[in-house]
Image (cartoon, rainbow, N blue to C red; front, side):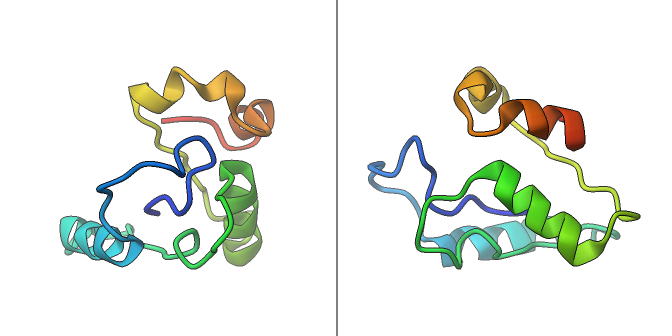
Length: 96
């Protein structure tokens, strides 16, 4: 699981927990859950995070045999058509 880094559509949001705090909250939330891990792949980047790039980097890191799933909330799903490479995300990774 990955906390979002710099979101390209909402980089001006205020009062958002730091990346480090969001990563730690995620680690606590998934603690003891087999097969689930937290990654700081996006919060380490100073530039905006694009989902397709992140998913592609994860595929390269873990290999083709490891399934990578993209979990998206309804709020973000409603704007999916505006995302960079949205069609490729759905075709290559699918959505949960």
